[in-house]
Image 1 (spheres, one colour):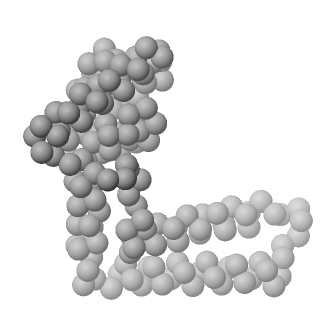
Image 2 (cartoon, helix red, strand yellow):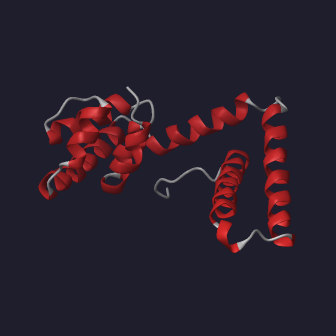
Length: 159
């Protein structure tokens, strides 16, 4: 089951359940959500049910989150620590590999070069959209690189 796409939608209502969906406890979180929404536990069914959720169901999801947090606390499981450990594993896996470093340096140089290029030689006003899109795409790629190397990828609760 791939719940990664649902993480943002669920996190808006229930951050802990949203985080758990994308991690190793995704099945447990999906069961808690699907029980409230009255749907199957697969990502597509939950997504469809969330689009049609009533305010009462959203309040029930929040209650289910509190129950889920209590259950995880009772089992001594820290959802956010699991998420952080998953990100750290990605960094450790590529620790000795030069490929991510070369790609990161390449992204930085391309971004800087393009920024200088459009500053020195601005495009015609009629074609402002494409340079703006490219700068936006390059900025988000550079942000992902920085997040990978410096750990700015944790979007959960503060401990």
